[in-house]
Image 1: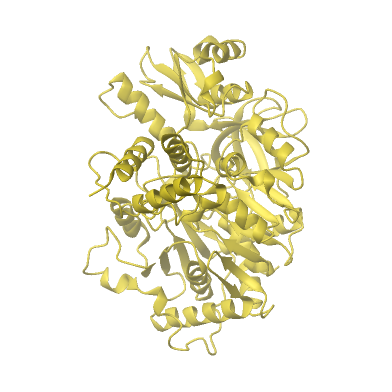
Image 2: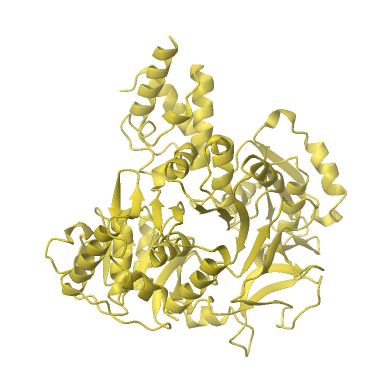
Length: 508
Length: 86
């Protein structure tokens, strides 16, 4: 079986004048895309890029960023896409972690001070294409075990860590997605997630592999749900993959349901739980496409898939569906033993999409496996297998807390609050969890606050949660803070909780 | 210097943005979106606040990165809609 990158580079130029990349202000045809990738790859090689070198791509989403990504891979290099607005301290930490060959940026970078080795890192991506180096450029051959991408993520210690993803990893996910959803060159993708988000393995890498068009939404555009829904309509998008928060905004503020969406075949969402009430409303208002919840941390890409026949109805922890064909899922206890159906444990996986490891952090990588075992990857997420064989999601392992000596699952509280149908979003935080008087707050987002009655929610919770899991306080607001990738910002809520209690120290 | 409308818009932006604390100065030309001073949820909140403050309805097709690029641009948008509502 061919690797994704071999397919993508092998078909470069096929399709001639058909659209390869489309963005708000322009189009790259297949022919233009092939020429640009070849030219940039030739330029990179002339500058000395060797197989295994890292290329930090700090560019806004657009054709140049995508061309640079493929040009890097064509040279056998490792692409490290980062948010172009990465704060200086974090960028410095990433540079020291990754030691890149060069940084591709469209302007001066905060946090990169002049001098060795930074001078030689500056490489203007827009200078590519001048030298005609594309002529005769032949891609470097790579093996499945070679690292293709490093995606940076926050570590629990505050130092960013790189998730090293091989060519075999991305190929295995892509093979599964193409087969499961019948993806073809006739499909039309929209890329909403940033390039440094693993959704790009579908939106961008897989679309280029099969010769399908991808519409690239840049960050300013993604801020306006109406712009996204307009692009979906205008460009007859058939494959939409994003996070629930973005979909909810497109539905509530972007006029999604009023658009003409005849071409839309699939809506995929991932990254967080879709509140059941909003999902039901979306599915009722936008009935044409099929819906699927794709589950898996960045370290494993998608390992479970829930094909939705209808909106979730029962008040139970959300289903993440069944294991993908490439994944062997087991629910394990703390020592790695498999637990019975219905019993809680950690969601663990073996399969070809599991990352090679954290970039140059063997100890950290080992900590994701049980002692004496290097095969079953621990996702850090908790769940159980239900009677139907579907996996139910209970949230992060590290969001299990003890309150007054009792074990409390914060995600459980949130899931129950969402199931009440009284709130649009929910996040539980605990301050001073180690103390006997640890306080538990439930932050809820209620977009239409006029009818919200906290005591009604409290009553619903009291009927379903054990005493220790009952929040000490319910804080309602119209909007909840979100992270740059559109998830609820738990850290911000946690910080607020601490600040309001007057806690002097940061949580451990 | 900001005029009255721009000053009101600034105050609304400060109200919704969690990134923008009092130590950060903004001018009518500060690129609000490029500097990532607002996220998607905050923008929707800002739009609701502007609609209430100025008693206007901003049509969906006017909700664009260009019209919200800076305080200047937002003020221009509000002015245009007010004039059209006449």
